[in-house]
Length: 116
Image 1: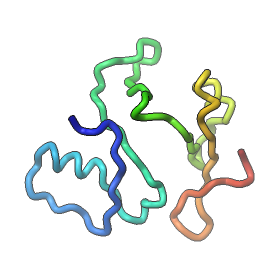
Image 2: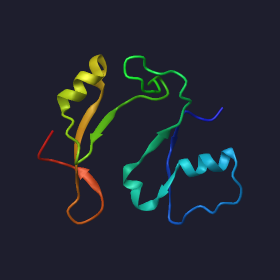
Image 3: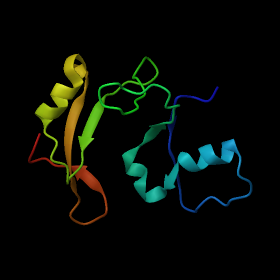
Image 4: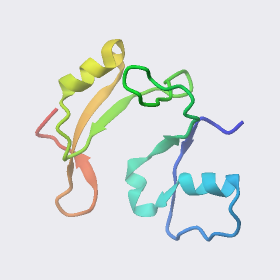
């Protein structure tokens, strides 16, 4: 069984397509250009069998193997910390919130120190 959570590999060159099989598809799904390495991203791919009846959306549950620790709100998002606290409910105490902004002199997204 493939791991539920896997770290992204950051590479300088695009992978070359030799054959399309499940292993190569997973390699592509977990690969990003090296300039994004500051994100230290991990990804979860799971089957979408269970639909949330209230929203109609599909979710993978957090568990012992995959715990939500931080939410980074993008620079163009209008989501507030109180919106996130309400959505997290009882799990809110274990999660840190960061509002991001675009860096002044690079393509990076960085913590906005003027907001919580």
